[in-house]
Image (cartoon, rainbow, N blue to C red):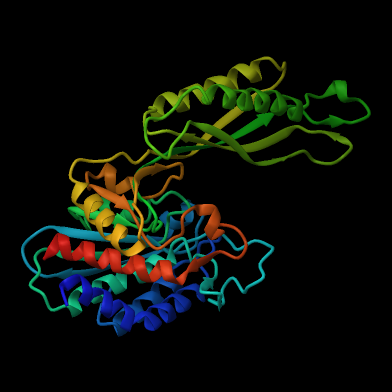
Length: 407
């Protein structure tokens, strides 16, 4: 057998063990919020130790974690050094949104049915804890002479932006890889993604009794004026198109609204949170300034209204960096052979913490064990799942790619 066939055979022989590993990871909740993620890191480290892959534990200081609205974070690094040469980092995040309603399977059960494993984070992205771990184990079992090294980065702050996940590891000098692969989906290799601006807007009026509304200033009416102005921008955004395949145009969403005191009271304060997705061609500073201008101009049309605008998140887009081509070429070649179809290199309208590696100058791509689309996996919805055959084949693709890069 050639090296690729040997890698494939090892993955096949240990696939039941890999599935059991994923089940164990799914069974430890990492709902964010509340973001008590250190227990999952502890359990992951125990499992990795049993595979002969000791993990460094890097707890993020409690004050920094709590300031970001979470309870605990411990990031993990597994370092495997084979000789002189480049280091390839493999990153997946363990934090995930709460399960929500509508499940027909236990969201923390890791149940298997119809060739699929169900559970919150089964597809995004605890599955790739196992993809990357077992790809490294297969590579080392090959016994080939290797150069360079591999690092597994298992982090816990993707849902809140990544600054305390990969961002914290990079900023504190705990890692400086030459290339990186981050958790993704099996049917495409992603080289670019959108940026994201999230803002909290508080509209202040003046409370009054509903029987004498003219003595107050209705904050809700002011908020409606602002919301209509913001939604009007979505029509204009469609005229701004991206040249990156897989990414279309910018868009804006209002995801949360709170306000008022009671049914018989003119609301004195209304707060809403917005999410503005930015295509790679946009300048984040200019985007934020434009959104603030729309809000301020709409508020000025409502006498007595005052607004406060607070930036919650500014996540820059991921752009292809020179040097990522060996990753793209290897994944496309092996993906074509193992999945029987071309694996396009493209962008995605999502935003991820992978951008932080790009900002640190590390060329990378997004590739892993997920399905053809986010929608198909039920990611962030009820009955999230991973197709086990996708998991098996993606693990082989990553193992072969590591061999190409390091052998």
